[in-house]
Figure 1 (cartoon, rainbow, N blue to C red):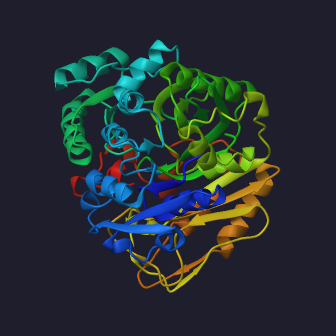
Figure 2 (cartoon, helix red, strand yellow):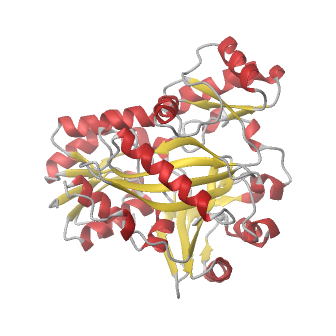
Length: 469
């Protein structure tokens, strides 16, 4: 095991990693921007280094500053969390070139899987079912139109270097293709510095189901069941639960086993997530891989008892996987709700401000991962995620009741601060959601809005890429 790890992130995930380090007797180094100097992880970590101003490009995305902080503090490894540089193959290679272990997949594997178009082709070769579409990026509108005509409308145009659902455009007719293609490329360039795009058949209605995998450097791997992440606004997840409800055990097993086959075929190491779309007939199709720890990883931890961050550190330290598939036992149901400082009545507009009151829920089967505290200033510079409320119960009905109780307990207040809690309660009260029969269109239906996927991310917010969480 390592003696010292630098955490190249902020917010609740930085705090989560620092806690795991302390539990394993590993010293932790927090890096922070000027805006985060009063953050909880700065107080909790063994050491803290300021790496730049509030602008993420000069701090959390500044690879040189992070490497220098690791060198100065004597860290042996770097944990990237999620977002920022966590899926940046160049950063993983820079870490290796400077003698630091990057806690994640190898740079060449991340480069292949982080490119969504390349990942499609690689997983297709591994025998995973894919949505009809292009296996290479499309350089012209004519190429995109040819693919769309071949597979049929509606189609979805995606950024090859994209992440977090940003920049996608759903196209329902040939007349709209050219403008959507151009718009998506503009957003892709602004958000990811890479304007390459590809086209897939758009499946609607569909469930968004993902599989957590763990693989070591010796060819061993396990899957840890499924999570349903269909409750989304603008392709950003709001509620996740595991196991995915209202699907047969045969389907859930098949999705999980397919994901693990793909991971082993790719030579994956560490914690990763394979994402699928599932139609009403329970046919599933692979869409992408997240080469990092997921925001919703506590759902899997609650139903398996496996600490995913602990396992990340052991695997990165060269320890063979400590689990076999037969050791993984799924028990009960876990649900996670993301509490963002956003106003659902104003199209989920971020609402920064100082928290005058902050009392997260607790009690039986309840976990709250947060970096918030009374007096904390929620700034305008980064992602609006404030807390994740996670509950576990032996069955889904009790888990839903427990979540309702937990959200009722959660007190968040401050001048101008709004949260997503009222809207999350609307979702929990929805009859379709309570039956476990819902799709990625649930949020749009509740909002009474047209399919938000028809529009790409506005240029004014395009800089909030996967790198800024």
